[in-house]
Image 1 (tube, rainbow over the protein chains, first blue to last red):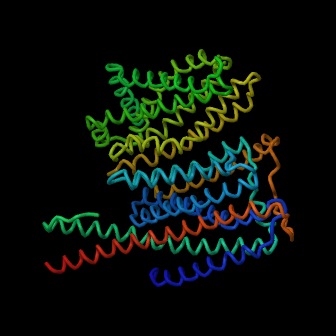
Image 2 (cartoon, rainbow over the protein chains, first blue to last red):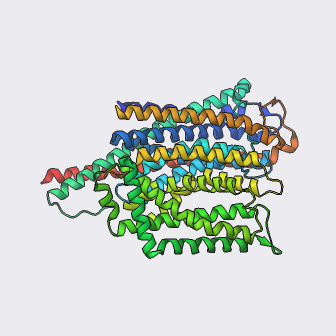
Image 3 (tube, rainbow over the protein chains, first blue to last red):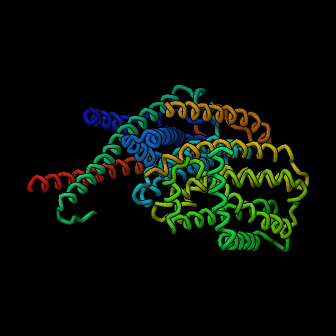
Length: 228
Length: 227
Length: 99
């Protein structure tokens, strides 16, 4: 079922990605920021994907931790990796925009700090899974759960400092040209996200199957194998 | 006394008894915290005076660093003698073990703070004792919040590889709200004109943080520690 | 049953946190009054001011180039890892069948 969906999904996502530059180029310029505002379309889309991914990872981790479903753990691992990738895109495109719009690469603004902290938590999650050794899945699930619960606190604490980031209120006020490009990018990212998620979950499943096969072979007293 | 509280009390008493005999953790952590304060003092003192707001930041960084070290060492000790394993095999509530370990760590950190806070006040001419109760509330709640997350993570990492480096890597991003609240709240008290409302708001946030994260830890301790 | 209760409490905790945070945001607005104003909308214009055109272009190109490279690099890495694991699986299955 999922395998049959994968082909069309990746095809449509590729088409949308190919069309995105055209729409973004057609979108009107913004009055005060000008050309550089066009970074916004991919920037917003990647942050939306990162937060979606963080949420998926947290929920899947909770299901894995309290119900012991192995499939949920695979989803969580995939979601954490996607969160880091999309977060990285957001973290790189953001300063490129800020350099022109604010005159500095980075601001200790509420949204920026929260996004950075969340990104760090999921990077730590991946480090734990990678280098924690066997049994680190459960620990990682705990980290994801705590990371998600942490978001409101980080947001509140840095919000007291300062906020100059454009609010989310800009989204409903966008003129059709801008809104079209933004929604186009969002749909493209969402489809790509789904496709990448499916592939990544499958990879996790195949890895588990491979480990199982090796264990079975060992049980039969099979030859030593070289892992690579 | 309920069984839960009894188990927690016994676990804490065990830790404190071991510590009272050797004093290894207390002395090393304390000296580490003092060294941290000194290193930062060299970084932030200009012309014989500390940079503005440096005292609050240095105090909390020293607590966070010393806390990480203490957490790592406490659970290393448990691992060495396989004590944690034995505790987990005991027919008691697992969350009670967590609470006992948490109380032990908080007691240790409180002892460290009893030396570090006056030291920072002395070295940086910081008025940490102008509002002793408010400062104590911030310190206490912040320490509990940091230790609540830290105890769970350190316990989880007992079985993991490269646990020494993974503990701070996991712990610092999650406890950033505690550090921000502690530093900003303390700085509000240290200003020439103390901002009591601001310090109060940060104390409130710490209460909230502690409640949410202790609750979460109590839930997750059981499934996470089950092999 | 206990699971469901826990989930309920968890949901309630998250909702309360969000509500409190929203409240804090309102108060936070008062504290950050001295900061530059946030933008509530993007105003479109037809012509780009000439002094704006040159310096913005490299930033824009860099941003999109990075996004593209990151996305397709990541997809390629999944594909590569998946092929490797599946090859190994097939190889192992063949060896197991030979016995």
